[in-house]
Image (cartoon, rainbow, N blue to C red; front, side):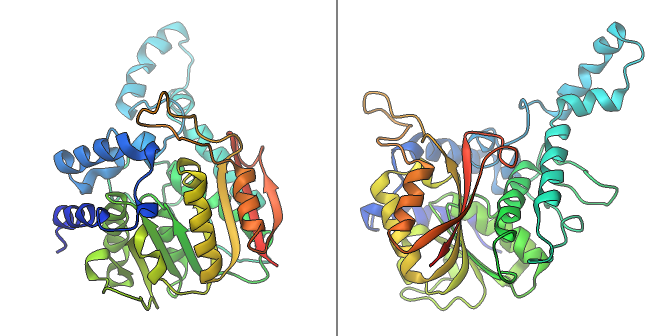
Length: 339
């Protein structure tokens, strides 16, 4: 069995030796401390319920109320309205209605003629012990917000592909849920995620738990150029060792947490590797600036427009730009294709 703590310590030590462009940016300075503390005290097996998860890599719907907290509110509400249905009340507070809304949008927007895709037969694993995990159909399948976020991204992509994509490259993939989605449905799908430690540890744990030796983890990756016929989770500084081509590159709410020159570097590398489609879900306005040079926040905001411009200089053109009703946030979902 993999020693995840040892692997994380080795990856953190390796950060000092990598090129500065791959080191965590200002935005992530406090996040790394908090996530590492949870990893050490709570263990990777419970990562979806870590206190830090909701802000840094595992968002939830609605207010962050635990299910037992929501349940406790029903009794006083029933006194005020004796006819109040319990199920309606709980679903109004626990994020269910937001989850079913996103699921319905993904099903409505998906172009099944271009990319046949089973949206109801697969869902998010309970590995990692999620607090908010919704049964949205009558099947024994559940979904969380990160999973549904990526379904919306892929639903937009489905409207522009000529054939079903099967190879995916991601930078800043969090716990690797995109890999879960594509690898569940296609035994031959290839997903490569590059991220900073300790999130690369979390993604490696998650996907190797679900898919075993279909996923190469950092401790098994040889130095130098990598042949990746299967899927992999790797530290971000191994990007120069990854060869393409890939059908799709995805970045979801990750570029906006970096600095413009860092994003430009990654965009250039992705274009050089060879990617046909790009899916970017990032904010229109950029993350807030750091205050007086302090930790957290960005030095210079990265906006959706900036990402589109950087890919445009590498020969990519916009196929579609999506906001509301598909994306209900300050984010903009953009699909680009190599000219």
